[in-house]
Length: 178
View (cartoon, helix red, strand yellow):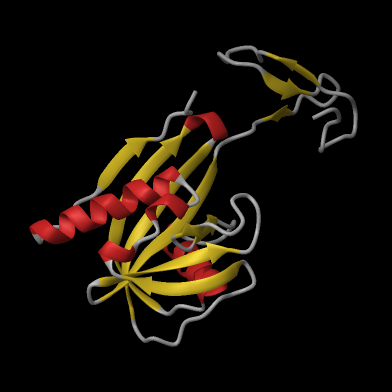
């Protein structure tokens, strides 16, 4: 950031008085510009013994599989955002069961909130951000073609919980691979 979005003057990157980390500051109007993590919301859609995955038509990770998810928008709840993303990516109608996983990914400033939800019908298909949308049995999940570690972890928790017959809330941190 080079210029203040409030007044247009130049900003500096320094620690504001009373704070503990550098921020973009405008000495002209006094604005402090905070940059906070992005919230990604989505759903692990299931129907019977199968889960719905989307093959990405966009970067990053074009051509790889994921659960329907994306950036939460202003003015919506996390559940509304998850349902919107499911519709945008998979044209899927879903009845949300519960929040299923929360993952922090600090090295890319993201927080994932993924719900578990049942497909209400089989009228799904690729939206503009997906090449394909498909129901998979656990044994057929394309594990080596998964786009993001957070989705792989969520699916593993889901299948483990399903086997136990008890779904919990899963939390974790996805660290940068060196």
